Image (cartoon, rainbow, N blue to C red; front, side, top):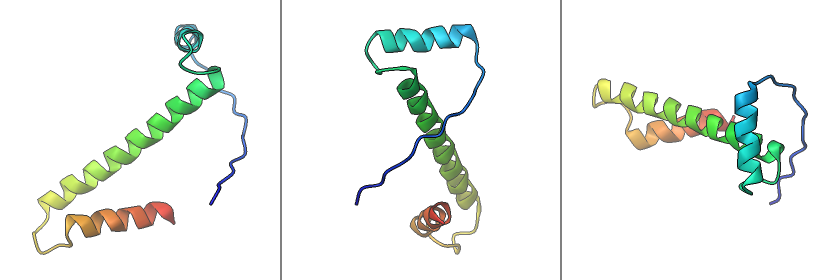
Length: 84
C-alpha cells in the first residue's frame, strides 16, 4: 500500500541564528534543502510528544492498582485512540 501525501505550505518565523544553523546542516549535505531539514525536525517533535504521552500513561498505570488492565493492553488502547 502506497500512501501519497500532499504538501502544504506554512509560514513560520524563527531567529536568524536558528536559520543559519539549518543552512549549515544543509550545506554539510545532511539534507537537500531547508524544507527537508525542517520537516525532519517536525517529525522528531511529533515523535517526542508521542513518546512523552506514552511515558505519562506508563507512569499513570504504575501508580494504579495492579488489578487494572495490563501495560500491553493500555499501550494497544493508546495506539487505537491515536489511529482514530
